[in-house]
Amino acid sequence: MAPNRILVALIDSKRFIGSTEKHSYTYEHNNIRRIKLSIDTQTELRDYINVDFSKNDYVEGLLSVLETQNVYNTGGRTLALNPQQYMSGKTIFMFDLTKASSGVVSDTFQSVQHGNLRLHIEFSAARTNNTIVYFQFFFDSQVEVTADRQIVYTYNT
Image 1 (cartoon, rainbow, N blue to C red):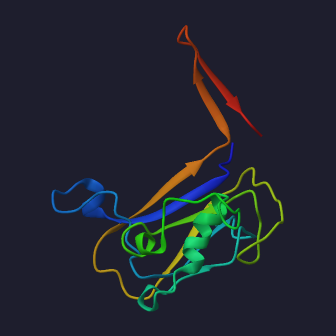
Image 2: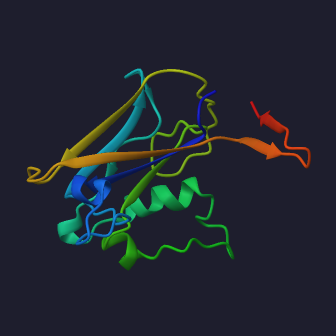
């Protein structure tokens, strides 16, 4: 079963392993210029997400999170992530695998069932430290533990 959404963040390896000097849940922008997720190099999930953190141009990155979490342009719903937090240590990117879009906003529906994922990242400056790419996969499924300790899986396809 393929995930519906994928979260991508970059973490300094010292933060990931654990350090008393560095908070492990800080996802810095690492001077990313462009990032894209594709499947089998043929299916484009969306165009590149273009950002330039040196010029405070982060809108497409933050918009990828808002759209994927279904809080963009929905009125009252919000996400506990503001632009200042996004720029200063909560820089994540999200990809919706149920939409094949060729721009920032799309209503096209395409369910991705299988394939090899490929992440493309371009940096505006060379990396000077080891960096780990953190992925988090989201599925529309449910795991339930009943009163008699039975585990029941529900997969929505």
